[in-house]
Image 1 (tube, rainbow, N blue to C red):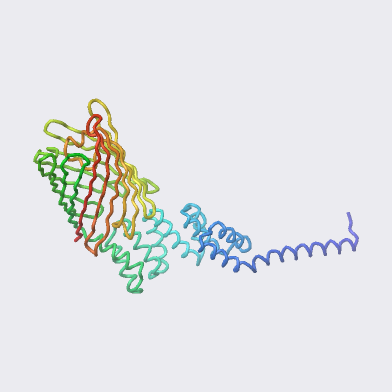
Image 2 (image 1 turned 180 degrees about the horizontal axis):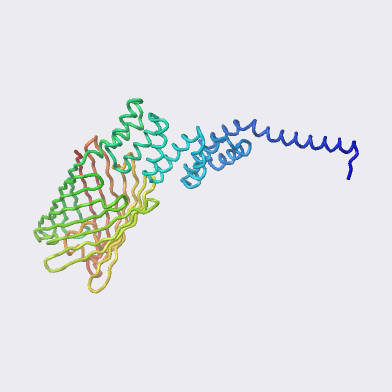
Length: 414
């Protein structure tokens, strides 16, 4: 079909108008991109992450190559612990320069926050390959090395950083933690007393413990003293926590006593493994050999590490008088200034006591307990600990009592 010259001119005019209008609409949001991005930043810093992401996406619709907006959206996901969503946005930026360095830095943070220090170390090293003296990457590398217990390498990395910025507060804080970790010997003295609401003499328990730490493993020697039921008793123990692989370690225990209160001999073994998402599980057993009785406690635990928190549940299974008795203990720990400063809430239900001293204690029928443990740093070398526990126990058939335990401990790291 042929068009007249008038119709052709009109059609060309319409097409030109539509093209011009589309170009104009594309230019308007592009011109406002910087303003929208600044608004998105302000919303993010105020904690309004959802609205910040909405503005960030508007910026990207106008200018898809606006990498600062992509980085901001990824940060808001990371701050909300939506790490997978952040990773999806950041991976494509690793192929772009200069956004690659900022993406590597944020990915290193994300892996540290999600307790994957090996990945954080890899991203940090990639960043340092392009900028060997970059302070932000040196800082992340030091944190990752500290997390995987490579303390000497962490100290070397921090020395490189502090030569450039001697007053860097974050680096100085990590350096103090590394120096503490490099102290491989610990001497601990502890004492606790247990009182009852009935006419029962107070129980006393004291211990002196020496710990030697190596790379990934630690070994303990302990001497304990107990006084109760008119008797006094001594026990010696050796504990070992050998590292079997990156995510697996074991607990081994052996002990002997003078047979007055403590078991004549005791043994223990447990296997621990750290699964993805920083979930730790264990399975093991304890053997307590008294002169006339042998007690076997089967035990297992499941724990989860969160930022500044630790949640753990441990169970015991014990066969007594042809019946199985169960005990459950829940711990919720809040870390304070460091991993060595904390408060722990302890809740428990069941027969197995926290300290397995005498057979009469272990053979009680049931107990409900609640307690609070705490530990605080005193200077560079010392830690002070304290504990308080209340228990309502059935120590014999239809016989109940309350018991209160208060304890204190002092640690010296050298």
